[in-house]
Image 1 (tube, rainbow, N blue to C red):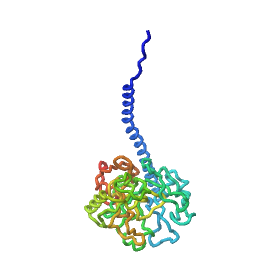
Image 2: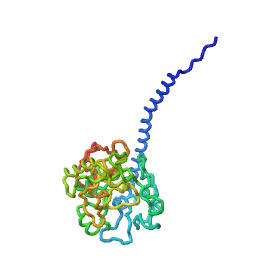
Image 3: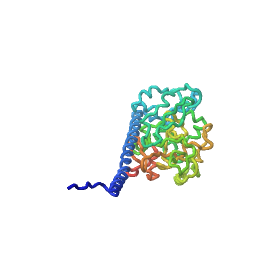
Image 4: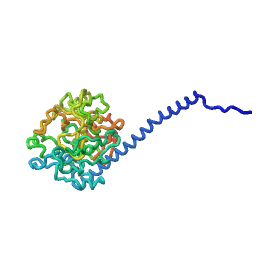
Length: 374
């Protein structure tokens, strides 16, 4: 006697498909979390390599690299017409990039406009994985074109510590400018309270394990119309509705932080952050610097109380200056990676205590930072 073979009913098939869909839905976040953990680990390793490179540089030269490599005040070389070389090129020799380092012409500025054929154009366009955080979905995106060559500058996610809040502790970090010819004689006098470099290990009296060295920032966007409701709002720079001039009280500075966090409308500029790893300007922070003003993952804001810097003053305040807030930011959930001056790397939460955050930014302000504060 033959028996009929029983198959799946349509309902049973749909139930099985539904169960598989639920399992995939449960598994997908875990896969994404694992991928982000790997990306964050790579980002941590990049910062570790830069921190160790800076310590090797300090061992060889007795100073940390300056935020911008320019000759001192009063000795302006009129043949230099472009941007300064940033803190990154001097460290390449210690990050297995000797070929790029040897191709650099350190006697020339980085010229980014004008006729083709200028110095350092060959290395300026190189994209270096050590300088890019894989969590940034715009990492390595072209932003600034190298004159009319059709090529674009290599970008960076990593930025040096310019210091604590500028109105309280100007230029008090570890990767800061030396007094240089971009600050004309009058500017050098006006900036007398700024604690410019060179910075040595001995000058970090607050302790190398308590003082920030490098952190990360999302690369700027070519979208010039970013608003606070835009998913990419952290890539922009806004103008704070309140002012915090030099010598402000801690309460005024804290009010500025709150006002910056609540700023609305359209950003002032969007593309400067990390747009070139090779270049820097001593009075503009977001290109290759960050500071300990607003907490991690807060927007960057210019400061209406910014000083006037001679011919280099930006009257419209499109660039974050030394008194503005240029916090680090990232795609990592809940905070940013930060390398400290002892070579260690820690994850700093966006909810870090503000006073502790300020203290991590200064090298010699006498604060004490406990290990459980970040």
